[in-house]
Length: 182
Image (tube, rainbow, N blue to C red):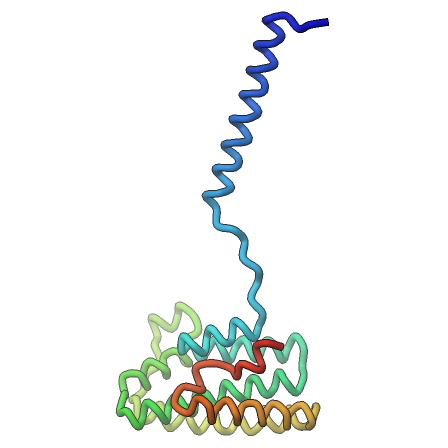
């Protein structure tokens, strides 16, 4: 049995309505950015190092130790401490005291209440205080890594030594490439 004209019109109208609704849904979906895959802890820390956001780099490494303690996690934290120390040395050689003060503020500010009660400090004093602290903390986290897995610690130290040699003036801006591809 063949559909009559009325039934045919209803079917076409229904089909047009379905297509319009599907087109609207597709248009709305294309306006939204595609969900990007979550970055790994190592990738996030690398981005923070590149941006010079050492506070978040430290926090990410500390969270990594909380989530999954390992020699590698402790050495990643040690590396960030060493990166801060090397960056401060570079800034000092360049006499970039404004950048030292910015680093101090990056490490000191944690929440919006810091905007109304800001930590203060002179840049040269801040440099000395930060370097002393990061050197001490680097020693502590390196010792913890060795206690957990000396072989892995030795391997990672060798990799970072090679990285530092290959990038003597910028190594602190990123983790060694060998660490990221794992």
